[in-house]
Amino acid sequence: MSPPADAAALASTSGGAALAPLIAAQLNFVLSQSKLPIRVGQIWSGCRDGRYADRFTLAIPFCLDYVYWDFLYNALSPKVAPDVVFGPDDDGFQPLVDFDEAGSGEKSCLADWDCRDTEALFSLIKELRESYIEYQKKRAAEVDDARLKFEISTVLSKEGIEVCMVSSNGRPDEVKFAVPLLPPALDMDLAKLVPGCPWKLPQKIHLQAVFPISRSYSSVPPAPRLKLVSTPDLKSFFSVDDVKLPPWLDGMCMAEYLPNLEENLKMQVVEASASIGSRRRFIEALAPTFGRPLEADPIFCRRATVLSISGIFTFLVHFVIPLQFPKQQPVLTLQSSQHFNAQGIPIMSAPVNDYPWSPRWDPAEMVERIYDFLVDECQNFKRFCSDSLPQQK
Image (cartoon, rainbow, N blue to C red; front, side):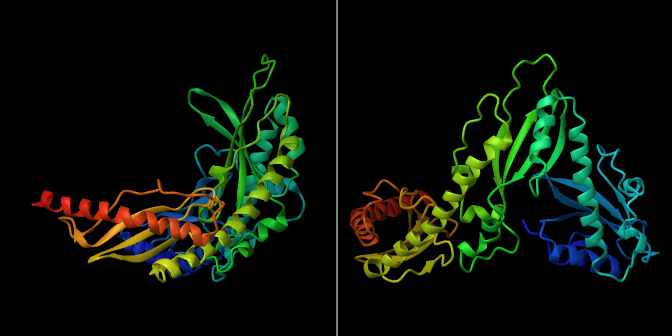
């Protein structure tokens, strides 16, 4: 879910005071310019009867999850940089101390804070997040587990990888890796594979690998829990849930596991792009038989709706075309234009996918077979609609 474009409006619609103008300008810049899906949580005022709100919680994406940080400004002293309160489990995260200990001469952006710079908060979040990534890597590297030390030494050089400690009551501690997949060139070109796609943020696919911290007496370390995770918008083009992960063999490490996975994933992404063309040709084939569709998805070609008539019975046919088309056939739903339930909603059929189908047919034959099926099916649907009406009295 994308964050709202106007932070001041968010505060006012949630029943609280609007953010002070200088603070709102900085937050709005973050929400509009960040390539990460940063979300705004609670917005409130540090004063009981303050005219403006001056503090808020941000959900910052990290390691396929979110960390929640409070940014505390002072509306009475808007030129002062905000304080930042990190999560309860991050007492050891002290980024300003780390700057001093590094001795590299670098300064935090807080040292030159300019309240009128709309990019100031954006720069601060970027700086803190980068420090937090390094903090979590350092924590993971200190774990007394030979296998994890090896994994960290071999894969952390991969660009964009993130790692964190995971603690849970009643369960041993674990280390979670978030590994970006696909070659950088293909990752950047995902949007180009779908002309006209509405994606505003970069689309990513990660491998989530969760390693239990092994006890010293464990002879064979358990396999990690593996899962593919993608950005939500990507699911309209390619579903990682349909990808079968290669098995993790005994003694395997991620450096061995990743190349085959990435190659397989790359091929499936390219196939997903080609599938859009197949779905588009199917939608185009609807026109000669059913007439021009009333609605159709012009980008991912996942949906189409046509108007059909049988005698005096008029109904719509909704096509939901799966990502695995033509291996999987479209799901049809019929909607009456003449029969309505007690709430005034058009009566619809249950989803239908038990009609004749072969992925080897050309689009024209697929459509003709569906049309022939609907000649009889629409009569069954008409009776269903008529039988439904007396039950509403």
